[in-house]
Image 1: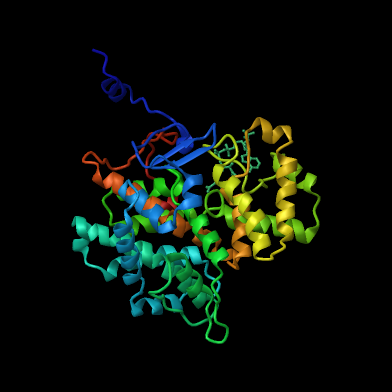
Image 2: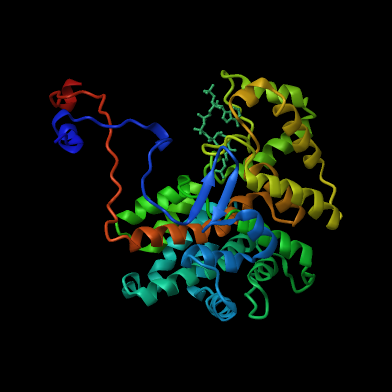
Length: 401
Ligand code: ACO
């Protein structure tokens, strides 16, 4: 019988798929995407329904456990998240030694990895310990993100409060001050809730693939998540939300003509791209971007925010979506195009945008890692290459080079 594996072993035949555009690296029952139709579902539930009816904690539970929690399960999860929210005091010292201008994504990635050293290794293999680690990470990432922001601004750390919800707690830790108490606005809390739900998972994207690849070597979960945060930082991935606002701000400040900006994005000799546009899987409007755009229309007026960047974004979209270059290449706004405008309206500083994405994506990373770890046939990720270098050459002593 024809044996493809044997044939490949004999011929050294290797599939080349740069960027893994058409390579399935795992089977998964977590997130369904249809890039042609613009569909996104977590465990089968449309993201639009979750954004309207669910909470971020409930959505996290759904992703990790494969089903929606009942009332008791949800309460228990919320209580555990509250119980876990404090950070070991010794970790504050780590934070204080980063240079003032250090990017919070670098700090967060390092700190999540460092968190490992505070908890027993035994938990890595014991199912109950692993569940504890999930909740610990979900809870502490929020405290750690707020801490990194406050310390970078030279402000005192605000401790989490047991009487606040997941989202409200984060906002309070970010913005409360004894001289100017932070007043929780239910519209902002709800906007944050939706923002995090929309970011909660997106199948095998760059950072999730990083978590799976790193995790496949059987490293502990903290290290795998830390790798995911590092991968997310890049401007072609999660870093795009910061890059979009920087692009819109530059257009606003310079008064650049929108048609010229779009022209530049099409110019192959110019490295400039329209940030927040295009997607590997979506060949139509990103369903998350659709919700985010609607949020701009509802949240900004509610918060009485008038942002000139929103008009620029709308105009950019209008021009790009009628341009043959963008039409032919199926380039539409992705989640990052409007998300920064919502975050700005909520008072989140630009350098924290990608951290906000990371907090939202954490349930996805955890559930994807868990799915791999639960698979008895989880193989170590080890892609091959097509070698194009010297096959053999002799060593030349340094004095003869
Ligand atoms: N502006 C201008 N041209 C673009 C853009 C853009 N934003 N995106 C893609 N193109 C062009 C490319 O130049 C390429 O043209 P070519 O075929 O003539 O060479 C074609 O469209 C296909 O683009 P690729 O880069 O090959 O597509 P890929 O799937 O590898 O990349 C990516 C997808 C990285 C998202 C890309 O569209 C991009 O760089 N967008 C801007 C950054 C961004 O918004 N990233 C966030 C993505 S969503 C997320 O990660 C959360």
